[in-house]
Length: 367
Ligand SMILES: NC(=O)c1ccc[n+]([C@@H]2O[C@H](COP(=O)([O-])OP(=O)(O)OC[C@H]3O[C@@H](n4cnc5c(N)ncnc54)[C@H](O)[C@@H]3O)[C@@H](O)[C@H]2O)c1
Image (cartoon, rainbow, N blue to C red; front, side, top):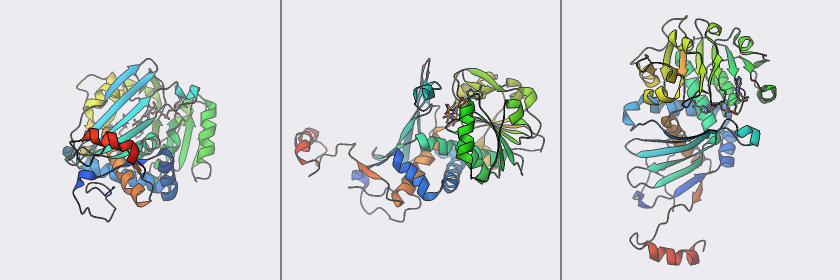
């Protein structure tokens, strides 16, 4: 039997009335996550996620944090991203394989689990491929709201693959971007993104080079996928006052920005120990100064101080963003009736007689 959990579904009105020992596991499929976003609206979902993520960033000390663990292959990486507060635990499984699209697979694929810290019960198993794109865009926009110059309207997007449309819509609705200037080495990707953004009200310009895309840009989002220390944006292309949202450099040996840009910027990160290994920061000395974003959100550190500051959000993706996303999805999908029970955990009537349950299960399951 499935019962609501006390630390989930912030918007759900039903209070738990019984002990949690037999909370069931629920499942949110990829299709149902897509239906949820269609039902709520993409801008509304991005706004809801940004709010959920910001609220959790503001209570940063409540979380037991660690850098993610990664297993590397020449083609890419598989990562596990755990985090917990006093009541809930989550992890995400995610890969990054830049060559995948040539084989018809996504570069980034993910799923995640939310569990009850008090009993260890897995409460939710959810798709996180779509949701990673949503939460990354929401986090980027949340950071830019604090770090970009007020009144920023023009954003360059370098790398026009799966994540890019979500970033464009998030920055349009949460930051106030009105124009996007697009560049990708794959012309087809840019054309597809232009098609995807048609009818959104954004002014869209396809560009032939990074130089051209950055012309007049207030914000630069880099979203390229290549497992190499690339210099997608050169130092001379970055002008005072710009905000750089560096998303694609997110594992050891994978960067996008010229190190000189960082030297003349104020650099903000999610979780410093992880970003030092994985972000643009891997190019810098160990004591290169950075500020964790949560400190800006809670008023403990300055964000942008002057109009001509160059700010960099060196984003690698942190487990807390997925924790917030799983909670948000659980609440919204539950209210929309999109969660399904998942027969994941054996629950014998007598917990000490697992074998008895096994012997009876085939005959009783489904009857
Ligand atoms: N920081 C985070 O939280 C986070 C979250 C999700 C994904 N990512 C990263 O974001 C990147 C983009 O992910 P995606 O799912 O959109 O990948 P994708 O493969 O769908 O798209 C990447 C695009 O980058 C383009 N590209 C590669 N090299 C380029 C170059 N030198 N100049 C211009 N364009 C170039 C490719 O042609 C492709 O269209 C990946 O590196 C991924 O690992 C980061």
